[in-house]
Length: 93
Image (cartoon, one colour):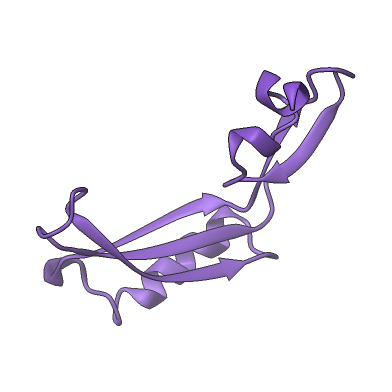
């Protein structure tokens, strides 16, 4: 089970291409999914949904398989492809 989650707060904004604007990020390195869902409930008083606030969470790390050795490697969730050992781009540089 993944440990550690990142909670991102967005505000609805029609001026942007995606329709939402990034506001704040909270990192919870020791929480599991149940703990983060509890934090979302706590933060709903600060960021109510009816005012256009969006709360999303994602894991801090993910496990990928190294392309050369075949062993699993744990990397940050938002690692770009050029730094990901499971892609050909990483090994061709």
